[in-house]
Length: 540
Image 1 (tube, rainbow, N blue to C red):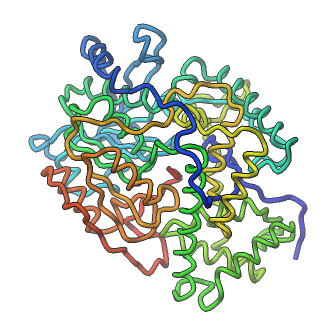
Image 2: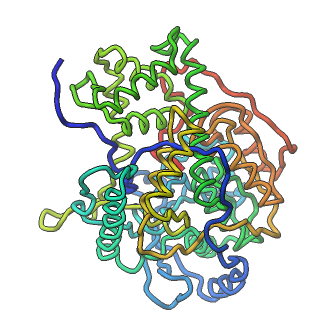
Image 3: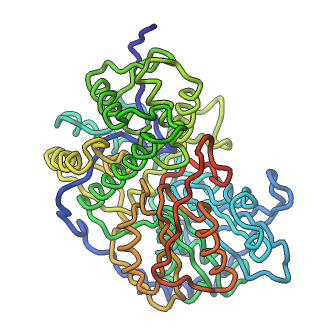
């Protein structure tokens, strides 16, 4: 078998330089680790007054990808506290209701991220929403400020180059190097992007959404937010509660957690999701490891990766521990279990498999920074899109030096011994260490008053936005009902007829499901990706 010294490491994902680790913790040590944000509701009235007196217009053209839809641009303030200052263009897409006479107004949608494209989601709306929703709503997708078509945050490709371990610093020297890298990258991205770089927080996004609503001439909007899109929904509910006709938040963020609770809860979710895979794989005829001790196979593979001896049979390259952890967690969300089983089996037996190439390609695509087409130039430095400032402006998760990071990781390993830490959470946190920008929208207990009942959907075994997050967010929203999907997977609207009906009936008739409503898990053969499962690279 050929051998190479090139080590397979996680590649940057959509601008988030993901460094893998694992974690959860024995103690929920901290509540908020930063002062609570100034109440967003206090400025809502002033903000809406500005919007009402300066209703902006959208310039529409036919969408090149789907000519039956309209794509538009709306000019908005970079800084909403300075509405007469610098501006940028926000990209919007509209799929008109199949029956305009029956339209119940605009249904704003966002797939999460941060960094997910709502325009792309709208362009694919026919595959994502039921015929009844498409008949009765104008689907409105938007790329949040600093994302994709909406003046993306960009950096020079060379600025992402960083030698050595960056996922989880294991020495003070590595920690100091990471701080230096984060600061240098931020300076490069700010220079390449301009003033918008410092104003890509979710509160600003919520204000953008309301400006689009006003431009559409709608008194109220409907909202479907998935994953990180639920944070957008929560912020909109704080700012503009009376502008909501209906709101569905699917795969819910809990924006009240401090540093320790954030990572430790996420690491528990990763460990729990992996256990669901182990339980299925050990008995399913569709798993390549059926009949074996799946957990032991995995821990043996991880031990080899730790020792630097795990080799990918597809090309002879070494598989690092962080790459194995990242891939395992990424594919722990159904319906990717068949692929995960095939990959682990290939590593275990040393036998190349076509499935391995598919798994690696999907993970690479999910991690690769986007290159905005408008920014490509043979004469200029290559620019890549980066979404770390979106997260770093929404979350204050301070880590006070290497010693605290090390203690945090060790606590995480105790509650997630196989996954060690949530790769997604740990990398999101470490990318902000030493980051010189301002946290515009730090965590706080939600202050929502005057909304209609908000519908929440969440799976019991969600690797990214676990069930406890949804329960805590429901308590904060107060006027909300949580529908529980009793299975595994991130975002559940499309999982079963039960979850879809709960959301559709609510959107169409404002019928709120009974409190405590639960939908049984869907357990398809999982021989291939479920037809109803939209492909996505967004983790939150």
